[in-house]
Length: 457
Image 1 (cartoon, helix red, strand yellow):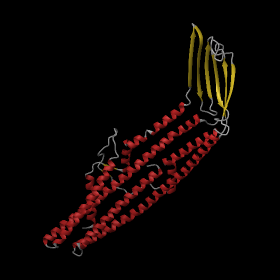
Image 2 (cartoon, rainbow, N blue to C red):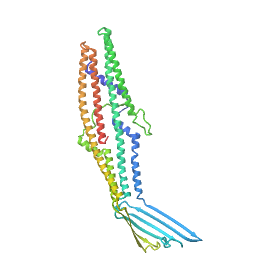
Image 3 (cartoon, helix red, strand yellow):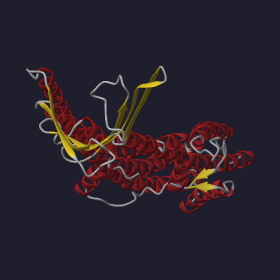
Image 4 (cartoon, rainbow, N blue to C red):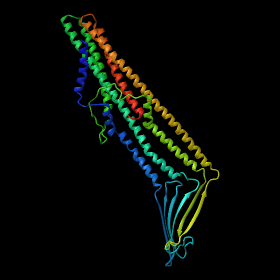
């Protein structure tokens, strides 16, 4: 059997496989299908909604606060006391964290507390409350808002982490399926060769040109290759179940048979990148790194807030008052100063120490994550380089093995070689084909790993 015939058999096996597979899918198309409706992706897509809720909750602490109180007592038909109080307070997100306050109070009655007694038209006031020492640069309200404003970025990072992990797992499973499918094609090729030879030897045995035992040996080889084909077929079918199980419909129901077969392995990476360029891309795009960087920013915000408590809590209230709301042109003013502070600042200093440790830990986490990202990229670049070298060697091995099979076939036809030797040559050829398929799959696996390591899968 000539080299040309062997090549025709390999191509025929692949064409036969293609003819039965009307719906074939490539890796990128498959990942798009996974990303479209997979529950993990849909759950991850809810993260931005939670982030928006956190931001809205933090902004709620800057909503105007309305207070209202009314009390009336009548004794023997006379107004003992009637008190109406209302106020609105508006905190501002700005330096010093001021709060603007507006109020109205009206108190009448023959038994009212003199402090609550007002003119008949009531009393109106407008003022501001400003911290003078503690809380100038930040306070709990503003700190919570600053941290909440980081939540959308954190949500997007977490969303990409879960997405990238799913797509990486899906891509590797798909490549396992692609490799197994091509190994089935290799097994089909070797089985077809063995069957053709069995028929040839049976005809020779009947005509007396060879011993009957040769037909038994040929049948044994056919059975061995049939068993090997079933083993590879089982692996391909199981990988197909795993791959198809990642595809879901819009209603969340798993699609049992979205496609029939994968496209062939190309053995080529998507693009050529230098290691340094790939590391730069990873530092900019890797969501795990972005997550620890946001954790560092959060820790620094808490540390800044903790240092605010090392200053005395001194607050100034000032405003204008119309003691008779019916005559707003007659304005007076009021001023107040409040201070409350533990004397030794021990709780505040402990808070500063705790948050400083948290900042240091977050900085170490960033350094560690940057190193891990760099290691991931370097390892995958090495994997791509070595797998490409292995692919070149495997292609040469297949070429040489095919030459040896062709030569041994010619010797066997001429009666100068045994069937055992020819079977061994074909087995070596089959093993070379398997290593070629494995090398192509390794190149594409390394490429998937690189895209994941860079955060752009």
